[in-house]
Length: 395
Length: 128
Image 1: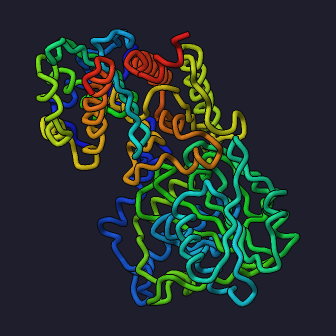
Image 2: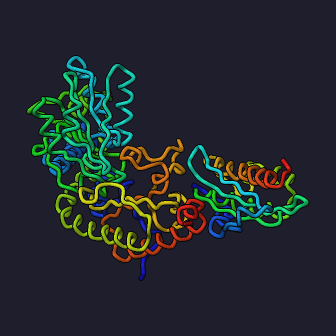
Image 3: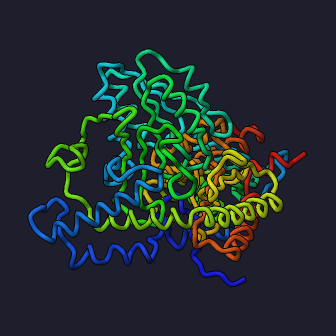
């Protein structure tokens, strides 16, 4: 088995730039350097044209039009703009927002910020698989609810939300629906019309595009969504997000979306098969392993496992040539275990023992088999020296 | 996170891993759970009648820094008197392993384990 190390299985953190994306970007980093807002000369026109082509490509992957897309610096900014932008704009209509306990911090923290400024936030608790149902959302609605924000796919456990059902509910109640789709875009099919999504956050670097660029889809009709801008300045992006456009980044983002739209279905099937091979390979060789997340309604590339009686960071250190991540408290600055695992009812001990494997386009069968062998050995070695394993297996 | 060669050596090749008979009167046992992060360390010291540590064992459920701290302590403790053992602090361990600031707390439970294991031995032998 010949594999090149280190092996990268942390694609939910970030992905490498696709070489075709880099090729598309290069001219805009060099000779075509114009400011897309310079309407008076050809340098500006060229940059603007490239941005508009990219905007179309970015919109298309979620079945939206170019005009619906507001370019941002990434998904964190898109989430902030969506949540704080709606809260400020619709404050007279109401001051209640519904979200879930397992959102990314880029959603949770703006919500918590609003909670300190006169808004009421409902953090719905998902089921043990990480699913928040439309019924739960319906039960939490009040006359003052102005926004529902539920992520399309969870970054840690990969669980997919019933976005279409929540969207239909939101439409029927006349409440705006935002979905943080950072992890879902490019991995699963999304359609803002069919799914009733009013606001959708995305990020380029999760789908083999460059870092530092993302977008917020903002619905323009049925209903027309208005946002209070969070970045005041030159009035770019229909006044919703001022700042000179990151032309090469946007071009790369567009190219990444175009590639994903064409190749996603085939890639997802291949990657899911490799992910399942990894899951089965580990589960059949190691006992006391549990799956975190939904067994089937899950991103094709994500596998989150807890290895009881072994701490996640130590496990990662034992297999240093494999890049994965953990929900262990030991790796976080706050020494708190993953809020996502806590949110789905995983105890501190098993959260402490969790590893997330997120596969990508470059993942091979050889890599998967190498990782299985590494994990099996590392878990065995660490359990031999685990006092908890000793207690558990004594009798 | 940067880890020193010494820390990684103790992590990859932990010394004195294992268990001794808890019922043995010459063995002091401590099991410490770190309140901060949930790591668990078990430390056992075999102590002679005249108060000298003759053998050590440990097991740790925790991150690399916690494992390395336990391993280093078992090496240091061998041959020391009970009084000398109690003088070892987590700062000594953290310094020797060059633990990064975020990982210094991982050595705290080792210090506690030494104290508890010695106390357990004293209690068993009517020396407390």
